[in-house]
Image (cartoon, rainbow, N blue to C red):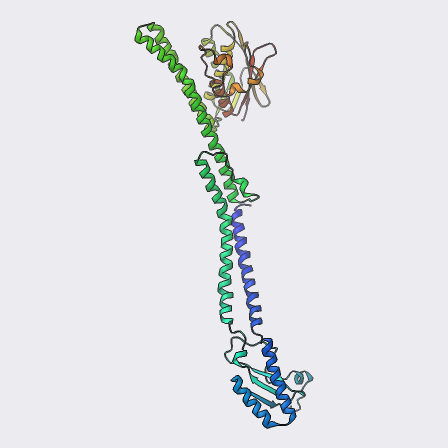
Length: 448
């Protein structure tokens, strides 16, 4: 479902609003009904007045009843009377039992009082027989709903406002809490902690904010990887540059002393070339590592590319033999000519460099699984099994090469070759041959 957060907020606001109206309506109705009823003591007081009037009426002492009514009106500041009703049907009308039983001149004490009428109602207590009644305008002190006006304002304005504020607070927390988690995560990243994860703190939430948290976590992981890689690359590069710089410094010192000027100049030129190649390869590797480049925009003939690389390598290493086993053609789509040529050249030069003089390096290309499999076999000493994967790490060199002051490699060629091949969609790995030597396998998919 798209726009999950929008739907969640709409449902919350919609259901909350409908529920709010329903609750307010129920509260207003029930509160109004409850406040419209006479208090129990007032109901009993009026019934007692009716009973007293009935006793005086049955005693036949009208003067006593008159005095009592006058005193009652003065005491309650209201009107009271005892009346007799005599209903006479006309024109042949007949009074039903329902009418005679329900006929009243005033309100029963158990009835509701209209809170919106200013005038107080007339209350009635019927005497035995039903044709004589005690009537009394409800005294002001007994009128219910004295605080109904304020209660209604509270129910219709105060309560909705409070509930809406509560709903807004929950919605605010629902949206802002994960944003605060993102804020804290950015502060951690700015302080150098790249292991921060936001998505885990959101639980089972599944909406736009959780998707943002997923993207943020991936960004944080990639940023941490980039910065860590760059730091490591800079540290390794600065370490590797110390040796050629020291050699250049020695050669310059020799020139200043007038010692072996030709050899010193050759040394300076050689070390400068090594440093330039090191910097160029390091920059290319950093770009591939950090940008996750996809170099798949060209179509090429792999055989033509290999022929060119083999010819260049044969010229550079005339004292080694290269034995190619290639098909007539190998069209490859979704690749990159420059990156693939440089990667294979690095692999082939590495194989030639570690093969003995007059040694043989075999280059074999076969179609395999909808793509191509390239194998480069040398006759060198091989690589210890525990280092077969490490040789593709930047600036890694085997102990023997690392301790050799005349070694030309910096341990970056194979790492760069792997990144270039992976950028074209391929894979590379190394394995030791049973009879000695190292085989580097390259798998290249055919994406067309």
